[in-house]
Image (cartoon, rainbow, N blue to C red; front, side):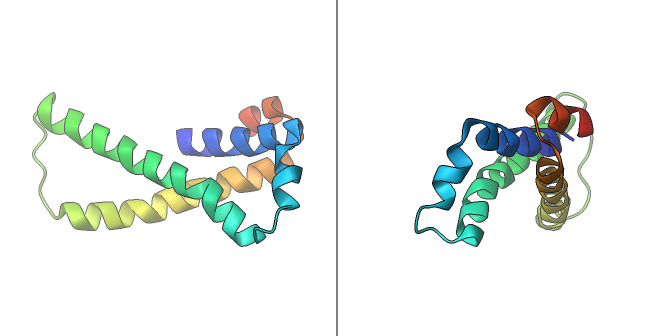
Length: 103
């Protein structure tokens, strides 16, 4: 859920401050711009899942059964869906408060 909130509020903030319009007039393609905005949040999502797994294993002694590689690959689908929802909310919201409440 934090991925949705962070993404939606960040994009709306840029639109409110006018930096998004400045980026749109640069020679960067819109797809490249969106990828550049989303990649850091994908990294943040993987950081969150890694911390959650470490806490589960080290603090709560939860045994990890199964493939960590498969877990991380499937996590990409969840992160992508969360970021897509955040982008949709940022499209609908006019202010940061609206984006936060919609998230």
